[in-house]
Amino acid sequence: MTWDPWDRTGESLRTFRGGCAAPVTGHGWTPCAAVLRNARALRIDHVMGLFRLFWIPPGGDATSGAYVYQYGAELLDLALMEAARVDALLIGEDLGTVEASVQEAMARRNVFGYRVGWFEDDPPQRWPATSLGSLTTHDLPTAPGLSERSRRRRPGGGRIGARPVR
Image (cartoon, rainbow, N blue to C red):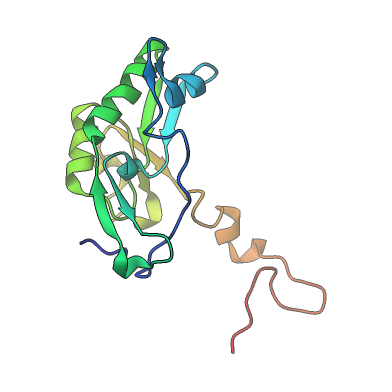
């Protein structure tokens, strides 16, 4: 079992009722086809979820859960077919605890991955050609939020959003 070094207790999210279990019809894979009607790029958040999910039974915690593997390569292929129908780019968010086999599957298919500058040891010139580089993500502070000068103060003192130390 691979543990997330940032949260060993796990995270319990409700499942999306249309995700990977959504039907493939004569009109394509429903989730991807719907998004790509009006876009030319599709970003799959936590692309690892196409390959493997950590299921926790109702009322349980991370210690009672287990990884459940599914047809990740096939799901990635379906997303690629939908992107190809409209000449769109496919981007898989592959940050954090991601098995090498997922990144290999993405590389074989020329699916773009992510690189966040402050987590990388190599300079951008050494990142894979199919990398989308960024300063931050939706899971991290905004770029201005990283700057000490941009942190606003509340009337009466203390930073906005700062938790008191006890």
